[in-house]
Image (cartoon, rainbow, N blue to C red; front, side, top):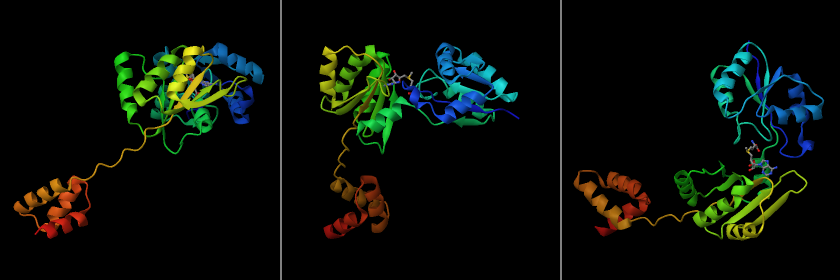
Length: 277
Ligand code: SAM
């Protein structure tokens, strides 16, 4: 029988966020697959644990993944951790989970710290619908395409960014979405110098022209206002009814089809057609 792959989030800054279940899981598994074993050993020391570890990071996915799968298939249990936060969220893990799920290895995700949900829940922006964009592409063409796609995005957007790229990203977003778009910049979440700034993108741009970006950042941006429905083209719909009638459709069939095609109300179109006669 295969063992289980446990996806184990770790604190994004505050060790007080270690949960009992997280600690118990790390204590119980046979080995840990860690993004950086030097980082994870500090967490294990804090918990008073010693565990065999193997490296699993974006540069060795192709070899480390099958090796970890082999051990799971042989019955060992593994905890997957990254340097901070939830594995597989802008972090290694997605491929290993897919590999295990495809091979019938049970996957158990432990809920825990994640910069995305921490920032979103603190933002005060609408949370019923949101999109997680992670890091914007660095390649110019892909970045432009992504920004263009976000221009009309109506859901709240959540982005990660490295400190040295923050000013450029703020400027690009202000240009693409409009400087007056509301945004919330979350810095050093759960840490001593946690800061949550709520202001329009253009003010964040101006602020980070003066300020050196230090620490870790999540940016939450308000979605675009909902687009107003286009007024239905009633003249076009009436002409279409006539054309469909000429093709032999009944009045009822023709108004139903034309209403569907032109996005107008069937009854209204029917009444207009009858009124015209
Ligand atoms: N998987 C991680 C998670 O679930 O939070 C995210 C890993 S990603 C490589 C690292 C990015 O997460 C950082 O560049 C930053 O955008 C964000 N981040 C991580 N910790 C943070 C913190 N304490 N405060 C603000 N942002 C943080």
